Length: 127
Image (cartoon, rainbow, N blue to C red; front, side, top):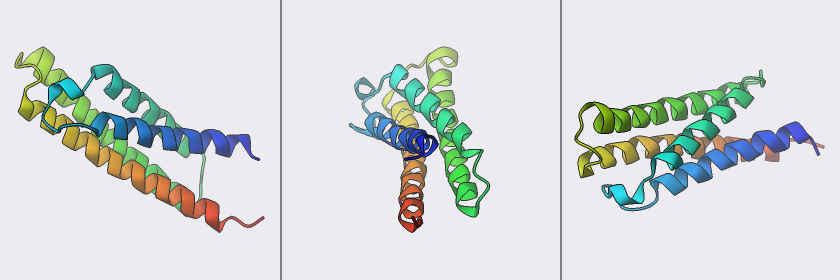
């Protein structure tokens, strides 16, 4: 067993599960969202992205692309949250919450693609 592959797979799957946990719930209900959960999603996705920089294969390039998309979506969700709460002062309204969840769902889709690619790569490995 390759410990590097274990850590790599762990962070890819953890980023998907954390993102799923954040998106789960009513899309426009701010009570179903917590800022620390979004923070955890961003941090774990960032770590997963950093781990993908070492792979120089074509599959590695696609995995990196999916991570960059997820990071971009999560950065946009974080920006919307910060602007709504700290700049505009409107707080977590239903519209703001729906925007944050929609952007996070886009990141989750990128994470799903990443996990599917990881599974495909693992199945294609020959012993």
